[in-house]
Amino acid sequence: KKTLPQSPIVFREGIFRFFDKTIEVKVKAFDKNQYDVKNKENGLCVDFDKIPPDAVFRTKAPNDKFAKLGSGSKKLNDYLIDKKIAKRLRDEVCVLASKNDILCVLGYDISEKVKVDITTRKIAIINIKD
Image (cartoon, rainbow, N blue to C red; front, side, top):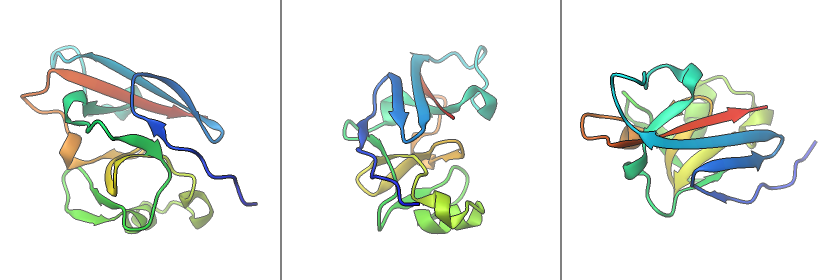
């Protein structure tokens, strides 16, 4: 079954509908002693100040590139294949992107470009749920 395209959603704090899922973005001051950024059960955690102003939640596009945290850059479609995401589901995977630069694949991984580090002051916690 073919689904209707999803309009891009500007990145900001709040709750949004994406196809049949809900995206929730919370922004908070970062205290490394209070928050475990590696625990994906809390949601994907990114450095809020590293997100470009043109970033949007959207589906994949041709020429998208993803530099997964801890590894090199590759085409987004190759990443989705490596993650064994079924072909029929790949067109509905939600990404946070700035142009063709993928910052986050919701529910899976973040980019090296938005990782939390010692300079981080504010974090965005991004969750996607059914």
